[in-house]
Length: 275
Image (cartoon, rainbow, N blue to C red):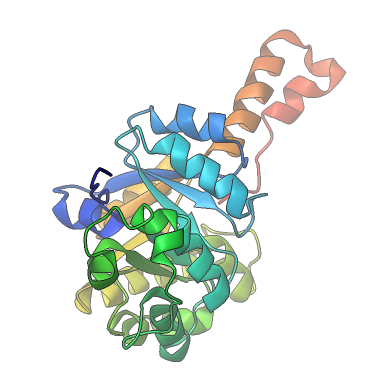
């Protein structure tokens, strides 16, 4: 007789049940082994990046399986606000999705529709074939899917900042993720995530989303920035990335043993363009 299984908590469960700001990191390498190493670190969540990282359905699936044995909650950032892609990532068992580049309520509503089965949405029904329902081993999956998934949309343009309250008010949007890097680019200060206008826009968005009753987070690899946004009310902060940690760590190691006149030591200490 087949066993019955229960779905793991999704990202909204983690955020809503926390009594502190939660901390997570990108996993961008596409490697399940690295994802598993990060999952055992004690970090709250891992954000598998299929927008900028070399991740497709197969590599994301492998990472979801690698992370499943650890307390860290997996979240997947899809490449684009596309109903076919969203359906496929949901079906491989990604319960928590971040949809990038959402600039207005209409785009937010499209993301909500892609997340849900009819009559609420347009998600295709394939639970018997899919890991999402553990091949129909999760009891009553079709009727419970709505409670098992989390939808976060990304505010990362000046237009989206102006529409943040309207986006957050869309029924079915669980939270907002702010991307200061693309936001800076859209504001004409490419690469300047610490520009006062960008910081002010991030803080404004945090306030607007919180006022709308939704949770909100931000990407901030610099500790001082992360703590600033925690103080501003962020519910979650993305504080690093596997590839960035590896890059900076190997540079620091090289700098210890290779003289500066060889060029490595000095370069390792140079400021980096980063999130």
